[in-house]
Image 1 (cartoon, rainbow, N blue to C red):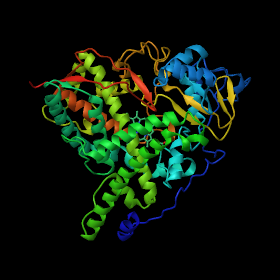
Image 2: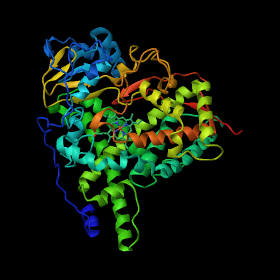
Image 3: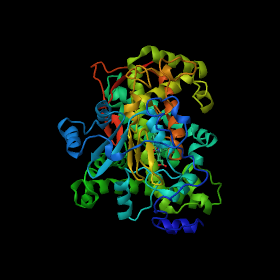
Image 4: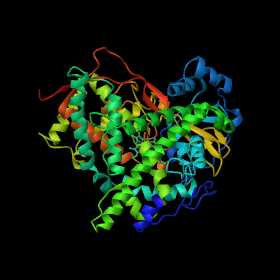
Length: 532
Ligand code: HEM
């Protein structure tokens, strides 16, 4: 069906399955940014090491590194109960083993890196095609179903090719700001929906399960940017298909964590695997229908000789640089990456603002100063709202959506601190632990947006790799700019309309890790009209 439709509008359809699945290219070109950091400078002299380049000496081998074996890890996960709070386990293990330790998880041996300068060392030794290795389980699904890989799961030169096609309209400011009106429409609907939810279920005050409401906002927002389609997630009654999509995303993330505990050879026999496959099937089905719908619209317009306007998907379909299977895989993965991430961050930001009326007031004053009356925030306005940006930045420090990031460097041996690791060692960058490192952020457990304001004098100077919520380098987040735009527009407009207050039952919400960092239970907040 896809083939017929596209061929008829003259678009290329080249269904080469699994193109570019090959391993990352070996060796580095002359343009490599790889540098060794002298072991004598690391790990203690954090401030200077990023610029020290030289051959490492007296390095220890990986065998000498301490850390929990499989049994100890199982004990921590299932007896001590850290299975859902692995982010906290990073902090506890760092206290026991120091900033670098080895850890056996199922069939894998991870080298955990929990110090800002050591994280910098690993990331700076990445080659041209960084490899994130928590993906074999996702890749196997695609191999089984004959689907292509998208930006999250692809590797090597083909990953670079895909990113070079996907990047411009996601990351170049001029293109990103062109999504402002689309996102603002979604924000308007969301703000109205909150009022409705509050009346319906919250005695005119409470919004119960704000996280779920924000999830619907983020889903609607990203679909409107990617597919140029409204999904009805902010309607009074959610479409069944959308509800099922949302459940499938949660299920897929949860089951990923379960499946990777077992060796790959047994995956297909696990009951969890069947559910995992069913969840992915649904995600691909929904994305496939959206792509199909867009192709039919294009076909109709071409038939009627109408002007073709459109944003992300139309552009990809017309750019003629990716096969339809590749476009489908990319859209599914971008959609997946673009929902919980944004919605969880805004949930945490509002959770803290509710408890901090002075910060909320300061934000409100900043917003009405730039956008008085009914003026909607625009992308240019955001440049004049440093406090708004600092609030989101602080939220991302305290709740890094990706609390730990797996990495492999395939090209050469890797030097980290006093150790040298053979190539293909699996590193686990413990971003969560570093976000709470007192030598990087003073008073790390306090939500203090002003620490991100220019000119603010801090007790300790932030290390640039102390908090890297969107990753670093060429493999950093594809949706960063869109996510920021969504969060800034929503937060600035929401705070103008409502005063946010905590749940009067006084319940606290802690984070858990379900592949991504999420609130352990629904966040409920009061929303009071400012104009009342
Ligand atoms: C607050 C919101 C978000 C945060 C904190 C976030 C964070 C991240 C992080 C940490 C990574 C991994 C980077 C690395 O491995 O070095 C990532 C990758 C990615 N993100 Fe985001 N993200 C957010 C929103 C989004 C949105 C809205 C989209 C889609 C529009 C998106 C699409 C992606 C994709 C496709 C990748 C994989 C990139 C690749 O491997 O080439 N993200 N994100």
